[in-house]
Image 1: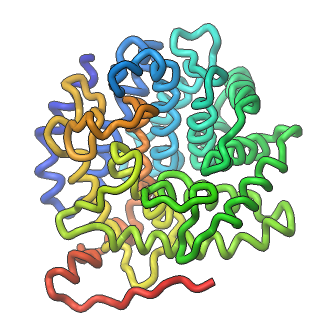
Image 2: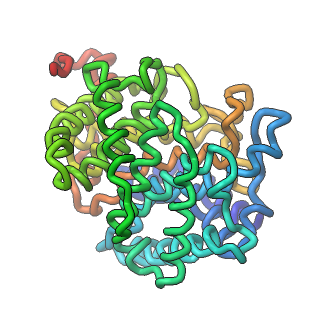
Length: 403
């Protein structure tokens, strides 16, 4: 694909300059373009299914091809929506934002129009509820640009596609949040038949599954993985942020959920090693820097971890982005992500994972929704906690969150 090749070559000429420059935002923006352009321009042309490869566990290509395109689009939108929805002072960046906002709206039409060659699967198999939820989360995060500016025909298409996932039965795990956040978006979009029970059930079950110190079990069991960041904490925060005032029992949960998310963001910040690496543990490691979704969200909402400066988080996340997206062979020559954590590592794939799944890495880019004059972007570089501690500098004590 010419777009992917062109973007890949442009990136190779710029990445060292932007990494060595204090202008971190420029570097982050290029990563956003690198991830977004092949997906969005292909969707606008109704050629995503034709162009995007389906890398997965050998033998599962046909099965995962049913889901991978909605995965790519929903997960990308989840990460880039705050940038799309924020007008920018810099004229060049604002022109780029408007272009991508236009692409996203056109892509929403292609993805939900039954006459489109890229009409996506919202009904077959269990997986569609997952990525319809990421799509809904993206629409919540970028409502002004991604929803309000759609014409009524496309809005109706999107609503019908999201409602069609109601026939999917979510597993008793983080999947409850997928059905819940879809209902949240339906409420925000003005649908009268939104279902409060799906929201209530997800919130109350996760309250039962809270294990302490900012972390939840994924269902009844706790897992050593990053699903508290990939899904659980960010979706709980977005759900309760929108809905806490709609029922007294939800209002009670607002402060605990937000406090736990802030604490968990602090844990994630401390997990970033001085070289930008982080522990390899649990499922879905090829989501790469998407493991820091929850920390990126805490930045966007300006709920900083305690004893951490905005610039420390910026530098930590920049190091993680560099470590996971700049390794050789991370992208194909056409600009599509490959399976892996650091480069191409197909052995890290689970059977549910394919090319589209990988675009959850875009969730790390949520802070681009902050204006360029924000302290997150303007503060002088400060070493993050592990970088400072392992250099011998003084760092604050870490303390658990008590109930």
